[in-house]
Image (cartoon, rainbow, N blue to C red; front, top):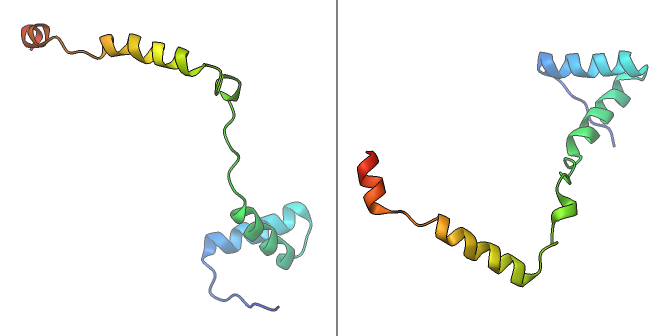
Length: 82
């Protein structure tokens, strides 16, 4: 398939020419490379994968129970600080 591109925005044209020069490839290959790169899905963040699913259901429920007490608002204390 042949596609012609006209009236490219200056920043797009610059990206194509810089990629072409930097990688020593044709403008056509540089355009294809940039288009393919734009279609790639972003990398999935896996920083905390080692912790995912580590707790049992019981442990998670126990933790949520402990947090419930911290989430209670003491109306008297709230009124005295404002």
